[in-house]
Image 1 (cartoon, one colour):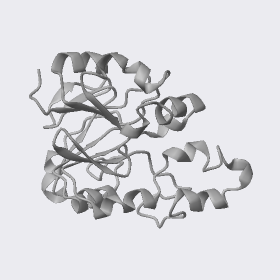
Image 2 (cartoon, rainbow, N blue to C red; image 1 turned 90 degrees about the vertical axis):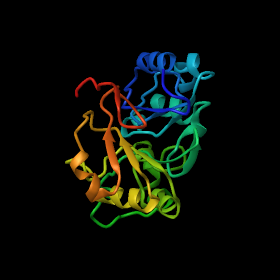
Image 3 (cartoon, rainbow, N blue to C red; image 1 turned 90 degrees about the horizontal axis):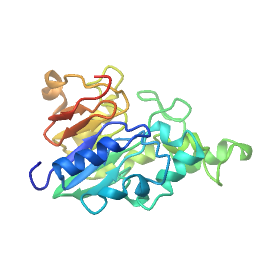
Length: 233
């Protein structure tokens, strides 16, 4: 089993959770973090019922978690909704973990281009009443990164940053996430989304932190060791 205080990071589950349950039973981590694209077909606390007494469950959302009302409600409306790390820093197993869920979308903000809307509220007032969803921004954009999502994090400090999008170590990553990690003072960044696990070691000095992509349904520990390879790695 893993050492006390261990945190495990899970790449995009995309509707499946048996490997999550198995890993918690086997390694008995203090906490787990799901890196987005969870797509729970039942409320998240139901999907993970058998491990809720064994570990702390945390997550960030991904772009696919707003694909349907069902996926949205089973995550954001679940009893574990307050375990979303998005836009904040939480002490987990003695480690400060910062989170940023969702993806960049050009309609709102595609760095390094200037942003079009600073906040979800600003977008909601401009997108037309017929496009609103539950009196707010369209459902798809509930997983869009707004500049205001990063604002709170830029005044914080953390040890680990978890994101759905990748920093610039990845070919499709974003340098604004490098800046976020540097501002937070993190030692390590874990990301999902890309369903791959590339070797970023050569970039560590440039970035100032270690980066680990966790693949499709992959599992990585807090030291970057791969416990379960992603299905497309």
